[in-house]
Amino acid sequence: LLAPSSPSSSLSPPPVILTQDELKKIAAYKAVEYVESGMVLGLGTGSTAKHAVDRIGELLRQGKLRDIVGIPTSKMTHEQAASLGIPLSDLDSHPVVDLAIDGADEVDPELNLVKGRGGSLLREKMVEGACKKFVVIVDESKLVKYIGGSGLAMPVEIIPFCWKFTADRLQKLFEEAGCVAKLRTFPGKDEPFVTDNRNYIVDLYFKKSIGDLKVASDAILQLAGVVEHGMFLDMATTVIIAGELGVTVKHK
Ligand code: 5RP
Image 1 (cartoon, rainbow, N blue to C red):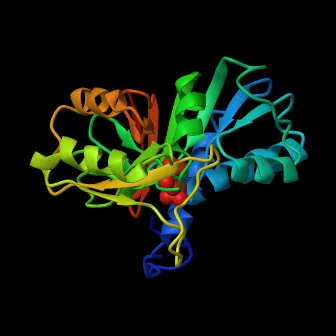
Image 2: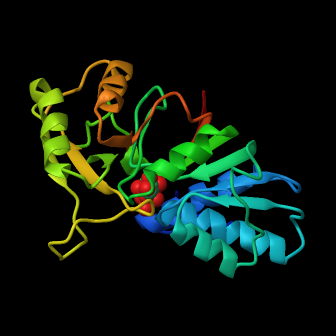
């Protein structure tokens, strides 16, 4: 995004380079324009979704939104939303969600996603799978040619029982893609990272494309010990991408 030029000056000011967090905030605020009073809202998790939740809280406080019910996708978002005074509920009481807003780790050209590097993929998939409209908010660094193509992790939530056995089976499943499976640990510690659901996460790193995503998804889910994976296939209805040259909105 370039700073607007001043009408009184003939010289254009130098372009303003926005930080990644500022881009995330721009995408988040744009997504909140889809929110209407009376909606049941899925509240995402992560540094981008945090901006959206802050904005919803602000609009509620200003009386510009009313009768919102939020369904948080993690304990962290629950705490944030509660502290902002957003009324909260769950899928048991509100099985149909009007709109969910959440970030993503990767977005491919068909708007398939990788999510869960923040560790909340299971609750995110449950809430976002129950919504009529799922708006994904990212800065342009999240765009990839193919899922797994960023060289960063594709997370899989697994039960702790014999986690190494499950991690080995996951790695074997994607041997041809040069997969390496690593148990996620808490940053700077040797202890396994534990999800809100008391599970572990195995991060899969690929050297090549994993091929047909639906086939890959089914194969992962068939392994006993796996709870859910971070591929969100055909779920996003809208993706808002904030980049240095402006905001792009893609619809499914
Ligand atoms: C958490 C997620 C996040 O949405 C994803 O990791 C993106 O995070 P951020 O907005 O911080 O870049 O899936 O489980």
